Length: 193
Image (cartoon, rainbow, N blue to C red; front, top):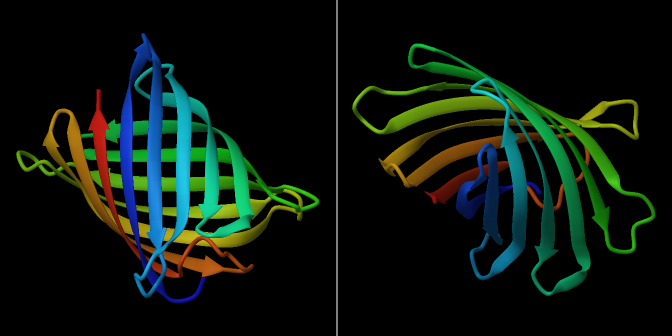
């Protein structure tokens, strides 16, 4: 979508057993005039931490447009994230395959999403600013880059179990995207069990 918008997200996550963890989150995206919510994105995920460098997971996401049952999408995804820390800097690389099925569509939309993130933990402050870029490669169309996402923001750790995140996100669209705005401000609250 052209224009600008705001994203609101709440997440719950925690350990299931040993190296297995879960994530449940709700992302609400209001219309650009803020008169009503336009999209609801509900995610359930399970992941496994192999060691301090490698995490892998899979999940399901429901993308529902308010008052538009023909706009329902079901997304399944798998990912692996490699992380390396040096001092207060952390570099991570994530590869994610996702397949999104739209109601009444003939074929799913499949992407390989490649993301590179750099973050910096500010000592004794709770703030951890970050920047990332992510490329959405269409696996059914010769790995064409349909979308590129740039984001910068900061996490703020309120206490060991609660975190706030504020970010700005910019998209370059090569195809129509009804779910994401070109410019967006996001606010996310996370609670860890």
